[in-house]
Length: 121
Image (cartoon, rainbow, N blue to C red):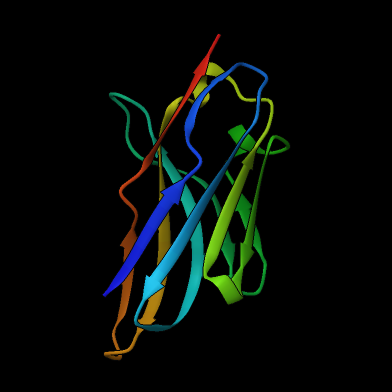
């Protein structure tokens, strides 16, 4: 079993910054990619940013230049530094671990429970 726990969400004024963290724990050998997705009320979940185990990154156009994803493989932790936040960034942010190779020799995707980010204008 693998668990993802997010932290760092909260309420911030427009133009402010937040840093999200997500730690993966449990019984696994490796994680292919880790990333952040978000879901605003009434909208579908969308990709924010992903990072491969080797460091390659991918960002949604809406956050390029404002958000930075990073990862500490040894700690099974992924971060999302969010700067110049806008009200439209308000959403529940979910951590994702893609293609986790588990102790039971399975490859599974996992999601965290989510953390709320609210940006006031």
